[in-house]
Image (tube, rainbow, N blue to C red; front, top):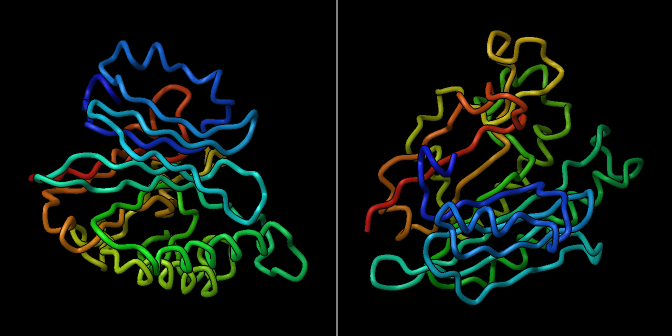
Length: 243
């Protein structure tokens, strides 16, 4: 990914290792001299890898759980700065009922805290990450079959829209891909042939404040990466901006 596409900034989720075990030295050798991580052993974890300096780094805790699910930093862009927020939102378990499923309740609380926090934002910013919700009908392979499945329930979809609107963010993937187009970033490991069955969901997102979104030239889902040896079940998403 880094060698073939050389993004200026790479945002990782589910690193699943403590900060001291992150392979910073190896990443530095690839030209990414600026590395900021927020990790823990075996669970969660996010990281920013950058060719350009990362300033005012922030690691915010949500829901008082001690989880490592957010990291943010400023980067220089277009004569000023833009703040990049990298998130890993809780998946929410299997049962979409907060009364019987603590994991789902945690997910909803996490989204509520994101919404409250975003209302106080100013300046230019970008939100990326595994948000674990596919909000629109064409973000899933079957709206009818998944409407009661965690990640596509009406409750989650509305909460995610509330979060996005709180920060006045543009869904830049949908800015470049029409609403009637099926787009996915995640395919289950359970599928014997993930590509043929193509039962995907768009769980990963790139949001930008309006002024920043005007600079996006393209947003690409790197579907081929899902077929790599020992792949993630998520495909990378790349946003191209021009100053």
